[in-house]
Image (cartoon, rainbow, N blue to C red):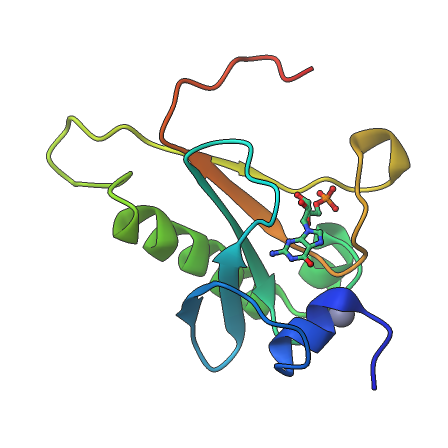
Length: 119
Ligand code: 5GP
Ligand code: ZN
Protein backbone atom coordinates (compact mmCIF):
# COMPACT_ATOMS: atom_id res chain seq x y z
CA UNK A 1 0.00 0.00 0.00
CA UNK A 2 1.39 3.41 -0.94
CA UNK A 3 1.82 6.10 1.70
CA UNK A 4 0.97 8.74 -0.93
CA UNK A 5 -2.58 10.09 -0.53
CA UNK A 6 -3.11 10.69 -4.25
CA UNK A 7 -1.64 7.31 -5.28
CA UNK A 8 -4.18 5.74 -2.90
CA UNK A 9 -6.96 7.72 -4.60
CA UNK A 10 -5.75 6.48 -8.00
CA UNK A 11 -5.86 2.92 -6.63
CA UNK A 12 -9.38 3.43 -5.20
CA UNK A 13 -8.22 2.88 -1.60
CA UNK A 14 -9.47 6.35 -0.64
CA UNK A 15 -12.71 7.67 -2.15
CA UNK A 16 -12.60 10.56 -4.58
CA UNK A 17 -15.28 12.64 -6.30
CA UNK A 18 -13.93 11.83 -9.75
CA UNK A 19 -14.84 14.11 -12.66
CA UNK A 20 -12.47 12.67 -15.30
CA UNK A 21 -10.44 9.50 -15.64
CA UNK A 22 -8.31 8.55 -18.65
CA UNK A 23 -5.71 5.81 -18.95
CA UNK A 24 -3.02 8.08 -17.48
CA UNK A 25 -4.81 10.97 -15.70
CA UNK A 26 -7.30 11.34 -12.83
CA UNK A 27 -9.28 14.48 -11.91
CA UNK A 28 -11.35 14.85 -8.74
CA UNK A 29 -12.93 17.64 -6.70
CA UNK A 30 -10.79 19.26 -3.99
CA UNK A 31 -12.02 18.39 -0.49
CA UNK A 32 -11.69 22.05 0.56
CA UNK A 33 -12.81 24.03 -2.51
CA UNK A 34 -11.60 27.60 -2.91
CA UNK A 35 -13.89 28.42 -5.85
CA UNK A 36 -17.13 27.05 -7.35
CA UNK A 37 -14.94 24.86 -9.56
CA UNK A 38 -11.89 23.48 -7.73
CA UNK A 39 -10.68 20.25 -9.27
CA UNK A 40 -7.29 18.55 -8.88
CA UNK A 41 -5.81 16.92 -11.98
CA UNK A 42 -3.03 14.38 -11.45
CA UNK A 43 -0.99 11.87 -13.40
CA UNK A 44 -1.80 8.36 -12.22
CA UNK A 45 1.95 7.72 -12.01
CA UNK A 46 3.67 9.23 -9.00
CA UNK A 47 5.87 12.30 -9.60
CA UNK A 48 6.49 14.75 -6.76
CA UNK A 49 6.40 18.09 -8.58
CA UNK A 50 5.46 19.56 -11.93
CA UNK A 51 9.12 20.17 -12.73
CA UNK A 52 10.07 16.58 -11.94
CA UNK A 53 7.21 15.38 -14.14
CA UNK A 54 8.27 17.67 -17.00
CA UNK A 55 11.79 16.25 -16.88
CA UNK A 56 10.76 12.61 -16.49
CA UNK A 57 7.78 12.40 -18.85
CA UNK A 58 6.86 15.57 -20.77
CA UNK A 59 4.14 13.75 -22.73
CA UNK A 60 2.43 12.85 -19.45
CA UNK A 61 2.58 16.50 -18.37
CA UNK A 62 0.84 17.31 -21.66
CA UNK A 63 -1.84 14.76 -20.81
CA UNK A 64 -2.36 16.38 -17.40
CA UNK A 65 -2.73 19.87 -18.94
CA UNK A 66 -5.11 18.51 -21.58
CA UNK A 67 -7.07 16.80 -18.80
CA UNK A 68 -7.31 20.11 -16.94
CA UNK A 69 -8.63 21.81 -20.09
CA UNK A 70 -11.19 19.03 -20.58
CA UNK A 71 -12.35 19.45 -16.97
CA UNK A 72 -12.69 23.21 -17.48
CA UNK A 73 -14.80 22.54 -20.58
CA UNK A 74 -16.98 20.07 -18.62
CA UNK A 75 -17.46 22.71 -15.93
CA UNK A 76 -18.64 25.32 -18.46
CA UNK A 77 -15.50 27.42 -18.11
CA UNK A 78 -14.48 26.86 -21.76
CA UNK A 79 -17.27 27.40 -24.24
CA UNK A 80 -15.51 28.35 -27.45
CA UNK A 81 -17.96 31.15 -28.15
CA UNK A 82 -15.67 34.03 -27.21
CA UNK A 83 -17.62 34.75 -24.01
CA UNK A 84 -16.14 31.98 -21.90
CA UNK A 85 -15.41 32.71 -18.27
CA UNK A 86 -12.03 30.97 -18.27
CA UNK A 87 -10.11 29.32 -15.48
CA UNK A 88 -6.80 29.27 -13.64
CA UNK A 89 -4.27 26.44 -13.32
CA UNK A 90 -2.04 26.37 -10.24
CA UNK A 91 0.83 24.01 -9.47
CA UNK A 92 2.19 24.78 -6.01
CA UNK A 93 5.79 23.60 -5.76
CA UNK A 94 7.64 23.42 -2.46
CA UNK A 95 6.89 24.82 1.00
CA UNK A 96 6.87 28.54 0.25
CA UNK A 97 4.28 27.95 -2.48
CA UNK A 98 2.19 25.90 -0.05
CA UNK A 99 2.54 22.43 -1.59
CA UNK A 100 1.11 19.99 0.94
CA UNK A 101 0.64 16.85 -1.17
CA UNK A 102 3.82 15.63 -2.84
CA UNK A 103 2.18 14.00 -5.83
CA UNK A 104 2.00 16.61 -8.58
CA UNK A 105 -1.44 18.10 -9.11
CA UNK A 106 -2.87 20.96 -11.14
CA UNK A 107 -5.55 22.94 -9.36
CA UNK A 108 -8.29 23.93 -11.83
CA UNK A 109 -10.00 27.00 -10.35
CA UNK A 110 -12.93 28.90 -11.80
CA UNK A 111 -16.52 29.99 -11.51
CA UNK A 112 -15.74 33.31 -9.80
CA UNK A 113 -13.44 36.25 -10.36
CA UNK A 114 -9.93 35.32 -9.23
CA UNK A 115 -7.67 38.02 -7.85
CA UNK A 116 -4.16 38.65 -9.12
CA UNK A 117 -1.54 38.48 -7.75
CA UNK A 118 -2.50 35.64 -5.41
CA UNK A 119 -1.91 36.19 -1.70
P1 5GP B 1 -1.41 21.78 -2.40
O1 5GP B 1 -1.54 22.60 -1.12
O2 5GP B 1 -0.43 20.63 -2.24
O3 5GP B 1 -1.16 22.61 -3.63
O4 5GP B 1 -2.86 21.17 -2.65
C1 5GP B 1 -3.30 20.01 -2.02
C2 5GP B 1 -4.81 20.03 -2.14
O5 5GP B 1 -5.28 18.74 -1.83
C3 5GP B 1 -5.49 21.00 -1.17
O6 5GP B 1 -6.24 21.96 -1.92
C4 5GP B 1 -6.36 20.11 -0.31
O7 5GP B 1 -7.63 20.69 0.00
C5 5GP B 1 -6.51 18.88 -1.16
N1 5GP B 1 -6.72 17.65 -0.40
C6 5GP B 1 -6.03 17.24 0.70
N2 5GP B 1 -6.49 16.05 1.12
C7 5GP B 1 -7.50 15.69 0.27
C8 5GP B 1 -8.36 14.56 0.20
O8 5GP B 1 -8.30 13.61 1.00
N3 5GP B 1 -9.28 14.54 -0.82
C9 5GP B 1 -9.37 15.57 -1.72
N4 5GP B 1 -10.30 15.46 -2.68
N5 5GP B 1 -8.56 16.64 -1.69
C10 5GP B 1 -7.63 16.71 -0.70
ZN1 ZN C 1 1.60 9.49 -5.39
